Length: 218
Image (cartoon, rainbow, N blue to C red):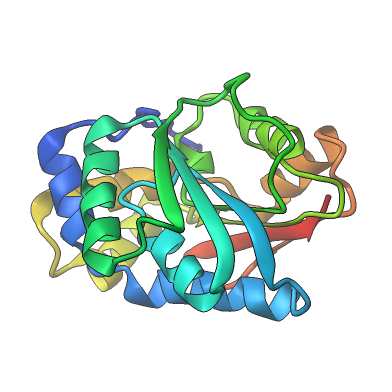
């Protein structure tokens, strides 16, 4: 299936509310587990979450690593509003903070000891922006983990995955999930992006029927 791009920002208030209320527990907790398995010696430091949305991954990461400070960045103000509410409710405002930053941004410097990103790449008009930002924001030796959706072979496959994983979700989430699957990249495409970005030492592989993972050490 040919890739069909979707808007870079999820900045509709109703869309943000539905996304913040959705149950992504399985995928988001798996993301933290993937990081722990690939970087067993990481324990503390400053972590940046690129495309943090309503901060669910950032919060899960902070809970898993009591020694980290997480900075989540996103370009969509409504998403960040829900994220700040979640951070306050979790009592983690001292270790998790959010900033409204749309990539690419010169505001990000090599000040982070780890970089994480979930479901951002498929939103970017130019995928190289993510890989350049990772190089820009990370200290040498920083572990990096990126996860995103994986584009199915055809529209029928996208519809089947939508029915399986979002069939009981509100209509806006079903629509967004289907569009995101069509906008997503495949592991071979990610491999080419990594090589072009000078990140050839990174690995990329499918980890489920709908997700791929890329990881490495800066």
